[in-house]
Length: 637
Image (cartoon, rainbow, N blue to C red):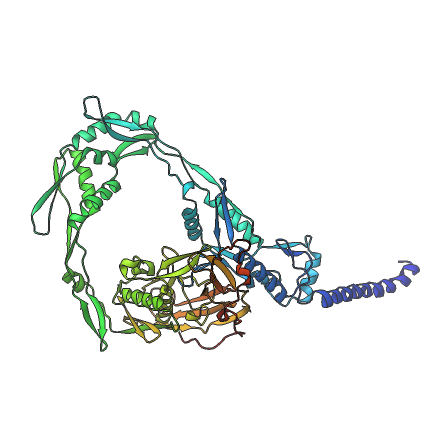
């Protein structure tokens, strides 16, 4: 090393750290004044640039876009131009506003901050040094495929034409005798559900609301006419062997009766199957069962009626006396019929099972000794029809027994929701139209049952919150909406014993008690945390022919939007076969809900027209929704 090098070396040792320090300070100042707690450059969500925004600004922007989508409605259109809009204006009690689509604005906003609202300087440096600095976020959401497909099936039925396999049929020949003929197969079509789902997801990921084109795909039959040509002789032999087939059974009076099968019924049982790349003919036992169910079950079956139980003074008593039952064993009888064809038998006795209510009860120790959980809700302020429907729904569940291991379905337990079963209608807004609909108030039943299930520590398998907050179901986050046929509310009885449901109404309060046998599980239901309050939009007016001109009727009041969650923890006793501790967080997102009023269509007068734009806003909808804060009080449900 020469003398010159020795003299300059200290300068580099001094300059290099100084340059690093200056660069460090420069970038630190950029971060401090431009990006501390803010979204870094290059981050976007769809068409929205998020750079430089703080968490609250990002969240507000996302909520605004979500509200716009929900307000405008998602529009589906087929290739013929027919449209269907899934919009948010539906009934208060008889259906969720977006039954197949749920948004999660807070979770989406956090994505812009790497799941942290407080971004530090070192993350900023890392961001700068990354080869690719742009970041396109995707909105967090949930699409329930069952609900989406149900919606498409309901609004575009003409797009669904099932394919038809070629099949054998009977026709009259020249001598008026029945002859076996072959019917040609037909190609069908169905909605391309995956395409619709993908396009909808693409929209929602970017929080845009383009129309969704509903396309179709062909559905091809699996059996052609050519396949049947070589099987025709065998099919004729099957028909001939069944010409004299007679089915016998004993009726309720223990008298033997018979039933003769017709040739055209046998033809409908024929099935063509692929076996080792060859088509073979056989009898379809499921079709035989369907035939027996239609023709003979009404003549043979008698449902067992279990004793419906009621608690009196803390003890179980029979509320309804049980009755013996009997049923045609469809599976065994179908197998027997199939075997008769193979063996060439001319008659057979159907398999019937007698069910004794006494043996059923004696074989099942109900062990209904104590209340394992109670749920409550208030329906104060409900109109007459709503109160009536709540009672009808609660009565339908009162006294029901849930078997050990059974998944309870509220929709199934309620049965048909119509006038014949005692329900009354209410005028609701659905798909932009005013229609009378049965069952308003049943979500009160669903919500109360949800709360009872929580207090009982049972696993919940299906629950959907309302799309907006409803005063009947406060505190927010503890509600459950139902709508036939979907969404349902479901849970599993994992207690190992029967559970008895008891309902009671006291004044404006609905209660459900679950009776059974406690197994030592400990239940913790956290207080609901309510946050992210969003003010409700202005009142919406809808013209209708249901009211007199100028008459007003407000079907919905305004509700602030909000997010809510609570934690649910069940600790099972030692020796339990399930996981010792089960924890779950129930999260809910409620959109801001505007007041909705119906206004009778104005009558046009010659030379002028009365417009609803000049109608005075009713006083009852001019009141703004109350200011709300985060709620962390112990829940009373």
